[in-house]
Figure 1 (cartoon, rainbow, N blue to C red):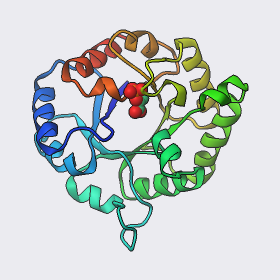
Figure 2: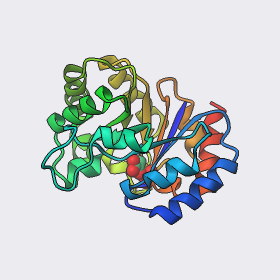
Figure 3: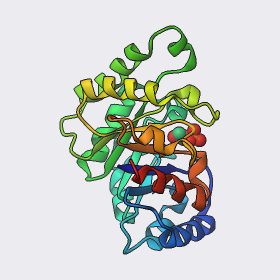
Length: 236
Ligand code: PEP
């Protein structure tokens, strides 16, 4: 069971350091835990969590090792900082920054080749769900990754229905289970659920047979709330 906290564009280095020092002391149950700070706070988080089992991951990575790609960060640069992994293809990247299934595959491959663990995000929009296209969307998004990536040992998929991200609307445990089963029928890797996970719903979501953990946004920004989610998921 893996619980990953996606901080999005919150917490600069000072806040990140304070959060991570508090997280070291928190009771996180028996799950694997990863935090994903913004790039500028990664070094601070790595330092503050040194000697613990809590991993630090980035929120994105470029496919080239270096080059004329203004504003991008490469996998070797993340490795040099001591970063353990990265999120790729988050719906906010797809929605606001033009990420496509193709660029997601390029980023996943580069990250894996350079020894980073990867959480690759997939999920349908509200309109797609209402139009009955959830399975087709998952087949397209996960299929692109399954076809384009050769080794999957360090790969995890996060099923994050776009309509549930940051909205307070959560997929029911049954909806999550169904979607996760579709993902696993295409690619046999662990699947995290993401979308308004909070202390109150973490245990029930985590108890579904094909739910292998959670990618938590808003509720990961507070140490108590994040630690409670970790403990709740530990019981499953
Ligand atoms: C996310 O950012 O991946 C996410 C799931 O956000 P939230 O938990 O806030 O819905």
